[in-house]
Image (tube, rainbow over all chains, first blue to last red; front, side, top):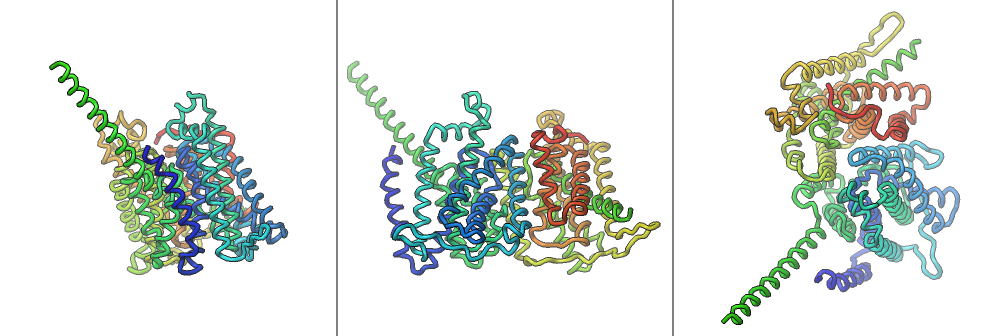
Length: 338
Length: 288
């Protein structure tokens, strides 16, 4: 119970910290890095839904993020569509393509699903790279306009964009908490814990898994759309599976199957690579073994570990109380006997 | 006629390289029941080892191939002992993520040593073979001959020797194999060593007519996965037939459809087939 009562104030503190962060940051570059970490966190929160809660390792996630980014890039640069219309279109297009990809790939189980999605991701990459006329091929799309202002608020500097990204991060986390705490979320978790058991409970496996997949690709599309408007340059490489691997690292470090795990991991690892500049190109020399060590010795991640400790403590204190009660009980028994 | 023959030759070359890589992958899958995402990285390390042995130490091409096979086999065995063996009882998700971690590490490690740029292995046999009015680069013929020779030897090893049949037995039924006294550790070390050596040989064979770079394994491993899904996970003839199918589909697709999209052909084939047969073309099962 302590974790529940602790959670609300802790969240408030975190939110306040996030809001005052730009004022404390030494320069705009830090704000920029933090915003990027938030965008990656939104994508990772989406991946966590299918990977952490539903137990399906989808390796095409970066591909769907790229679909979102390219939707915004193509619509705004080549067709002059306003940013926000393109933004909405990006989420829905990713989800629609995700629906068909999910329908096809979720017929496969376990390993086959992962291998298949790896191929789907690579197909997305190849199609983006080879379709010169539509996606500008290997050159990528440059000069994507920044998000247009809403009313009096404009998004033309790093500060305002930071708050825009933060806003979407909070919304996506809130939405995710509603999803995973609903009956549907329990169905996802039931599938992760055992597909056969979930099916005997009356859960429609295919429909539920496709729904989780579509929701997660919607998140990816949104993150991609934000990325396009924020970085304002996109290339086909963002669809590569190595970006999915980055997101998996975020999720594992923070805590797989936890709400805030992906965010914690994204922020921690982004700052870690930033502070170790020499690691930029070779970060995988550290991240690779880190992934292996994490699944071997620390598979629950930071938040998972914290939760486990909380649970153990609660169990211990419960046992203490029970022990005390029984001791008192036996003493009373002794006294009445006497 | 000549153009058609060229495509057949291309298909055979690609197909035999893919088959070698897919064979290693399918053997490990049969024993371990995990898709070894790091297998493409082993292939890449194999190419770099050959490049180093030939380029920097001036070794003979065939000695370099043996050296590369040895190093990569050792690497594969190490990965089993240090990582996969310890994750035996972990959920399958953990194995896959660990394999990805290994892949990332090997790629970044190679890039740290040799850089991200392209390298080339000087062709040891630059001759062109002429037969009637047909021409063929010698290296391609060597690839085909060596790959098929190796596959034949592997077939003999797996079916005719006691050690080989322990691998098949372990793939067919783990408990049963243990019951009749087969040492699981020995079999898994052996399987990883063979799989690594096959990947390194495939890479060394292919290197003279291809480029060497840190992410060279990506496409190959993904195609190898397509092959073993098509051919049935764990099936050895499936890997060979699947490899040739993909090789031919690519060489003819590149010629008659579009060079630009030749890499997509394998994946399109996979999507098409799995849409109709989610269990793959051949039901899976270990046979030799």
